[in-house]
Image (tube, rainbow, N blue to C red; front, side, top):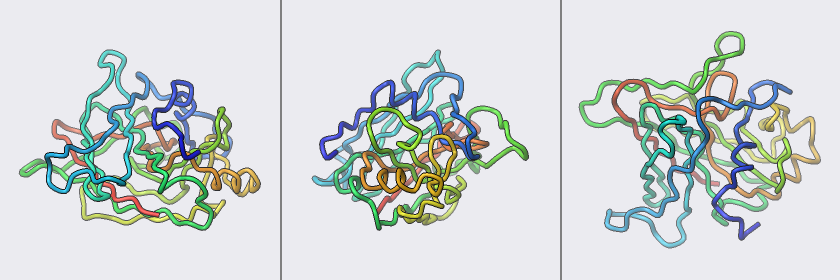
Length: 243
């Protein structure tokens, strides 16, 4: 577990295109395109307060249209603050780490993240949207970010978990803190939308063997179909993740 590679394989990426808001709702495979790794970052050492030895390395994944291929991006880490651009037309799906200080046995821990989105100076107010059209009654949830972790090896529903209902609705605003106890099975649902209370043994095993952890982005009926900003201006997503 401690030597788990940060580079997720293609098969895992396909499996991760999930996170349903309803029980037994099945997987989501949003279109167009495939999820791409857009940043494996060590921050620019020329910047003040940049990457320090021992800081967590983070991966950011996004969906790209078939015609655009891999979407380039830059991700920065300043003493625990991780930032990346929300670019119009690029749907961010995941921000995760496999740093040994954040994975392993998370039984008894609480995940916490200070999150917000900012815009450039004199930029118009930001709007947010998610990939795909809603397929559930009432249009589903607004674009949001929520906690996410993986465990195990080969694909199983119970190897992927999303905090549910705890999430943060994306907004250009002051920083907001979200928190979720890891060992609360009623606060997590798996790849198929089933809560941990339905599989307490597997849930307990999953939280004791966490391999990646971080945030997932989605909206409508799904937790990981990707989010972006509307209009012509980009936003900056800021995350300060702690356990």
